[in-house]
Length: 180
Image (cartoon, rainbow, N blue to C red):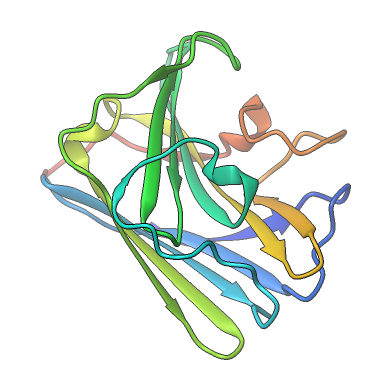
């Protein structure tokens, strides 16, 4: 499925973070697993452990996200995953319009692992929570570093400002499953 090197939006450059990669590590009939790897994470700000549960505004600090738009559809889904183990899921009927909580068959499992200069963040997302295949998607990250420095990372960006909801961010494609 490949690894995507996420790019920081030039309007909000990172402090010490040097690289963010993201990938879908596996898909089966029960789960989609994702991994983000942040390098240069010495000054990374992580929200404190809060326990698994739905929460809003996770993007206010370090947060990892998946945006999914079914092929041919105008609506899309947004999934937010926090190192605190909290998560959020929303449906949008159009660009930043018609936001509603997305029904989830069960909570995602968020697992952060931090070393001296690297953060590995794994997510197991229930496969049944995803829109139908095929779909376009974007893997993104909001990175907060000490001193209030925030950078916005995505596979691709709109030019003028960070906006993960913008069409440009749905830069990857997942084909219809053949053997799931």
